[in-house]
Length: 182
Image (cartoon, rainbow, N blue to C red):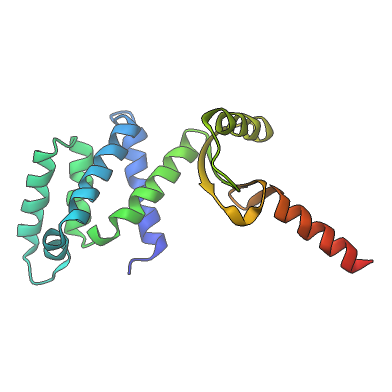
């Protein structure tokens, strides 16, 4: 298991390169990393070979290089994957992709929000909620919507450590606490 500090360090370094003067389109970098990760995830043999200490590091690098070539990955993405492989960190690629996306959003001024609703929201409702959160925070919001039937009704929005609870369940809990306190 690789520590979160190491994951963050690699993700931050990649974000520095991608957003730097000779960088690349951030969305392209994310697509490339995801496609490589999906390929590795789909092949247990490949995943095991890259994780195995019995496979020579030079062979692992050659395999990653060939996969990068087949997927037509950019120089930046390919080099990042080769460094991960060389430093025996490839097993944490999924976590690094997530940390990389979060880091990019922070650098580009986006906030990530998780919105839970009791039922599926249509596109218009999702847009309205995203716009309202953007108005509240003063930043553009990248929202992930999830259905949580236990909310009974309404929406709960989480942005970092801040929670906006507009759910029926939350209101019932508030009423219950007030009644218990009186």
